[in-house]
Amino acid sequence: MLRLSSEVEIQGSKTWIFHELASCSIIEDVATLTDTCELLLPKKVKWEGAEGFSLPIKRGDKIIVKLGYDDNLKTRFVGYIRTIDNKNPVKILCEDGMFLLKTTQTKKKGYKNTTLKQVITDLLEGTGIQVQLVDEDIELRHYRILKDTVAEELNEMKSTYGLRAYFRTVNDVSKLYVGLGYPFDDRRNESFIYGKNLISEDFVYRIAEDVKIKVKAISIDSKNKRFELEVGDKDGEVYTIFHDNLTPEGLRLFAESELKRFKTTGFKGSFETFGEPFVSKCDITRVEASDNNKGNFLNKKVETSSGMNGFRQKIEIGQPLKVE
Image 1 (cartoon, rainbow, N blue to C red):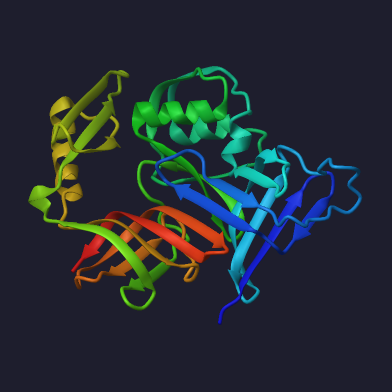
Image 2 (cartoon, rainbow, N blue to C red; image 1 turned 45 degrees about the horizontal axis):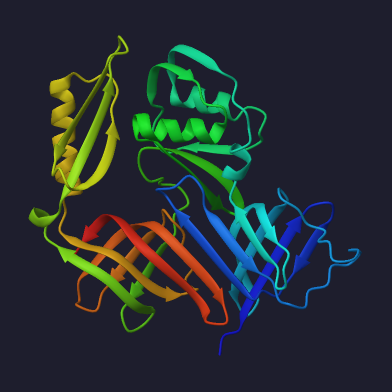
């Protein structure tokens, strides 16, 4: 029988490492700026050198969480402590690298003609945070940094251009990704088969004609004039796309072609599996469901839990890559 293993490292005034957890819950999602981790420590935890009932850890301390079976540990979360509930047992709430960007002040600045790469470089200057652009450099043309913090500015980019910003942990390093789609680097490819390692499923199979999707398309031309239009179903799931320097007619053609790409036959939903094989958001998942439908999908959201109820992953599938 497999044995649950864990390692939590907290880097503050000193480095603390412990190998026991009452429970751990991690949520990562490409649709949100921030991934979170909630840790519940065992009731009997002794902090060497701590005085009285005060805890030697604090908000902002760096934290690394590794989980696995039989001491085969893999990094599942890298971030910072947001809050500590020092009741017994101690509960620690953490956020990924976006925690730092929520308090990093921006330098208000205007650009006459700029690119996404330049704006992100300026926003992250001095933070030491590694960044990866998902798409080829996107022209933003006239742009102004107006928000107070970097996280707020990234959220404004999402609202204005449909750009996603989120952290991924690759080779134990937390890196900020910014772009319109899913990244293509460092993606795991794992298979989950019903009756083997797919414990339960919550899928809905849909044919393309029944899929309701609304595409919101945005373009800014060389004179910094903004065009925005919508195609598809009014009550459909919204996909935001951006393409610079298109006429309104060209933007509509682009939006309609993307609508056809998004309207695919296949299933949508989530499933539960064991803690291994380990997957994260943006990885590729092959699913063989109970009704024999099969397909390859990009992971949109992964919820990982470890504790008294075992080691589990709940995976919400996103964009289909191949449907059989």
